[in-house]
Length: 564
Image 1 (cartoon, rainbow, N blue to C red):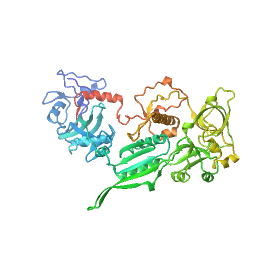
Image 2: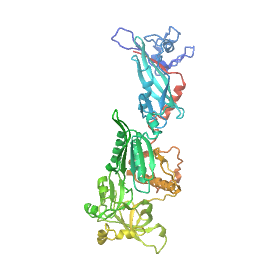
Image 3: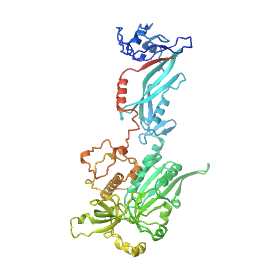
């Protein structure tokens, strides 16, 4: 028999007359050999020589003296502290919403999270007894498709006077599918109680792509029993009116939208005259402004006078609960909330699909305009990308707010006012005429710096989540191309704009094949430390500890006796 790292026995309490002993590391006793050979460390040789071992009265194994004078195997053979504790249980999960059944309700919990561990521990019978003490509980890794959950429990129990046994074991849970009541209602027609119709009168989905990421970030779609995509918006369906009102309050807190009070409707479904109970369906309407990021806007004359009389041609650079507009010539900014915008209602005169690529030939900073945050005013000379190399190509003059970002030879994207289809209408527009009497109309309105994306489907090492929604219309070839173009434009905005990236959650793509050698250093990329790992919250231990735990799980259950 071999004994490794056996410590000296010391009295537990010198003031008491009871001979209580403390035994440490007795779980490291190797009981497999019959030969009594002792392996002593060099540091503990003198201490080990002074230890007097006794024989277990049942199996005659040399052990250190303790209160019960029994070895571990004999102690566990007489007392099984795991008796009455369930080892294999069943837990129900809804396949659609991925919620777990906790009688009498369904709760949301990520895999290997604290909420899920609490739910599993409450289902294990026997560990809530007064004489059983739960010391530790942790998840054991299982295959994601195995439909199994395993947790490792460590409990303590007093079996004799001043003798406490500690034991570790595993409990397995079988995941079975069961549809929750909300998902049952979502698959049944005419079961929703309230709906929200969110609309935006534009021919693209870029604003809804941003709103979708905000909904996923704050997990506000969990109470939706159905999401249906329309040509000009999205419909959200809820099982109760209160859930719809909560979602509407969320929309008004994250994005600029107008709640149409006069457009809310209530329809009677059924009415019980005897009990005076009526069943209604509620429909709420909300409208988003048609102005989107990087759109060119012409401010109405009344609003110009209230905002200082600056240039009426402004760029929308950010959308929150306010519309943020900037004048690239004077760096003057204005913010409009939903009430102010719909009071002075105006539409953009041009969108990002009309942007033109220019090359910067020369740039001169303007000293009479004070720098405003990250913006710096500068005068630039531009040439169209199509006219590059032509000696007779016209040189276009412009004033930009991106003077601190640009240099000679860079490419920019802007609105060529001379080639816009609305150019003639702009010259004779009543909102622009007072400004043109005192100033010259600029040739180009620069919006942003352009980077050479050589591929339409650029390989990225990150991804965005999306909501599960139905489509209530047919998508033709041109609509599919337009949606793909909107998605690519939105992803490029996330890569180029750090402020926009802070408002959404960007995840690592484990399936992406990303070659660092093919990366263009001029093209902006999201650094690795800003990417979120979907399984980061699930991994409670490091890989080395996980490997050690897997090796320990292959062995028998670990036993340890603690003698007070």
